[in-house]
Image (cartoon, rainbow, N blue to C red):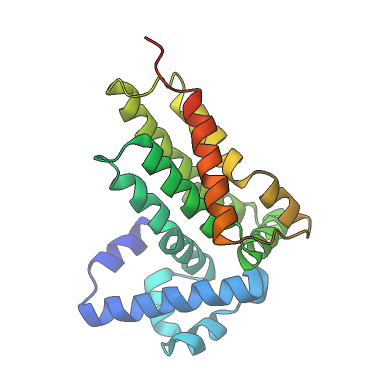
Length: 210
């Protein structure tokens, strides 16, 4: 994947635009049809690009999927990267909102179910999905919590474990139910209530008690 990233960095503005169209089309097609049901021909047709461009920039369907996953999740990671001047209450609330928007939707849950099924035949795909999606989110959050601990704002003895607890609490039964076919009926109000409750409960256990 590093070769593909270096290819992206060396593209001209026109090449970057073609790449972005392919990524947007890939996201939509993967969400609509799942990983197994999506074809590179569908994605090229949706983007108005060419198969040669797709293979040159992403290598294959797997590489395109991972790149589209990273682009789709980048908004969540950006919230953490730009969080230095914000209080933890605001950072974690916005992160929880982003995670719910990213993961708890019917197309996204169906995509995850499809990846789980595909991973039985192609374990490397499941591993890449975890490393480039959930694992990275937890790493970014763990690093944020580590900096808050070092600054004396929060007491986080195990940032990695705490990051897993927070993301698990946010997705919780909504994701588990959705994977079993009972999709939650979410509104912005319910999302915000969940994000606020998770943030409040989580921070209550991390406040320094001097």
